Image 1 (cartoon, rainbow, N blue to C red):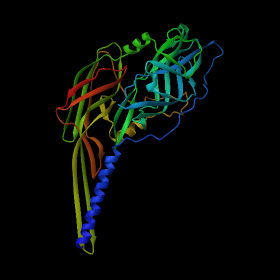
Image 2 (image 1 turned 30 degrees about the vertical axis):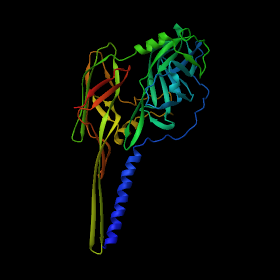
Image 3 (image 1 turned 180 degrees about the horizontal axis):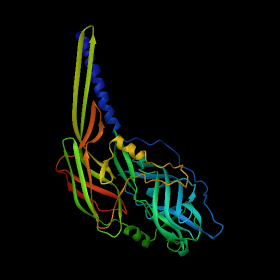
Length: 401
């Protein structure tokens, strides 16, 4: 092989190397959501009973959201609302889109029903078709761990003047990585509270799309619905390529607390390793070139750990995402279907102490020739947020080991 051929091959190799590095830098950008128009509202369809008089029942939505900086809108698109009662289920085949950022201190009715007065409502099911977020003028898809939100209600009876239930989503949008791309995840902490016409200064005639201000006493009751947990131990450190995170929580309240996930925010060290090998064997002239790329940089981002028993499952790896997607309930399932909880959880009962643990490699990419590994440097400040129901509002900061 002459000198010109050798130089040409080296130039081609450098171009390929630059393309691979550029690919990974580009795929770390958020994936934009496909553009779509708002869904239309269809007519409400409910089960009825001729043996008892019917009373109106409205389902309203409110939301004090926690979103990334620069967020101008957080759209939740739904396809159906269902009531689970002490008799048969009632459903509203109604679809719509709600900007959750517009519901601070106000509530919007998303479905209405006509129910027999002897019926008690114990659960509301909200069928979520999609969620999107607008940040700095761009629109992105938001991953939702469950397509059916099951919201418990404490045996709401229409006999005492209740005309509806107020759903408090309290969603927290987490920015994290899935595979090679930045992703947004909606982690709602959902519960519902009954209300009367007097409490909302409303009438018995309530319609879909109606907006009303939440009274102060209802706002205070919503704020009181919080988890009574104490932090007993927490640690985050890396050894080699592996990261270790554990947290011990104790329920010091009188009610059980359901934990879904833990979000950890810190300055992560990202290590890129790549091996490029080119060889040529022509007319017994053998030529081989091998490049080893090793580069590290720091980036501040949250990593979401889902609970699976007392073990934590890190979100960054694609294989973890698939396990959650496979559990999604179909939004076209019939009302008689029994939906399994799509999002794994762990219930901490009063007086119980639980330690959640993670130990493993946080890999954005972990292939034969290319890997992107997250580790935590020592003496870095990190904070975490427990995603639970009732919600846990405490936010602590600690130092990595």
